[in-house]
Image (cartoon, rainbow, N blue to C red; front, side, top):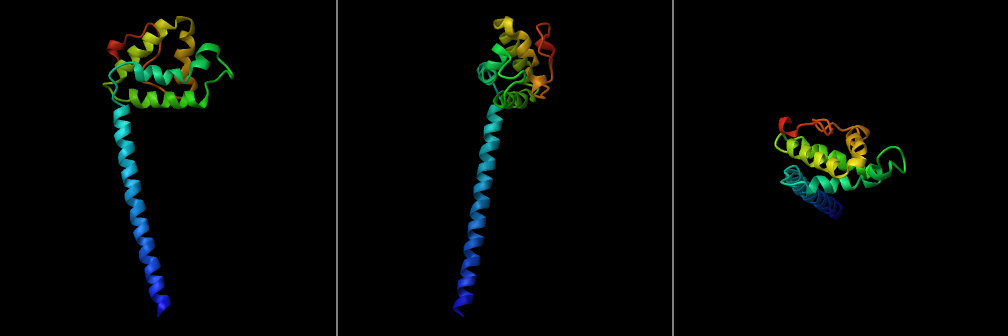
Amino acid sequence: MDYLNANTNCRLLLIGNMQSHKRMIGVLVLLMLTWLSSVSSITDCETVSALISSCSTFIKYGSPDPFPSSPCCDAMGSLNLIADSPNNRPLVCKCLMSLITTNNRNATAIATLPGFCGVYLGFTIDPNTDCNYIT
C-alpha cells in the first residue's frame, strides 16, 4: 500500500513539475516575443550601427577569412529581422547608406555583407539606392 501512495505522490510531483516547466517555457516565449517586437521597431541608426559593428574586422580587413565571422552573420540575420518590417526597411536602408558614405573606403565590404551571410534585406546596398522608394 505504501508503494502505491509513493508512486502516486511521485506522479503528482512529476505532473506538477511538468506544468511548472510548461508555464516557465510559456513565460520565456512571451518574453522573447516581446524582445523581438522591440528589436524589430527602431527609431534611429544606433541599432543598425551596433549590429554592423560586429562585422568591423571584415569591413576593415576582409579577414581573418574572406568571409564574415559567425557573430557578424548573426548580426546580419538580426538586421534582416528588423528590415522585414515595411516601416523599418527604408530606415535600415538610410542607415546603411549613411554608413557607406561615412566609410567610403569600405563601402564594398559593407555592401557585400548580406550576400556573404545569405541574407536579403529587401534592397540593394549601393550608393545609388534611393531609400525613399524602398517598401
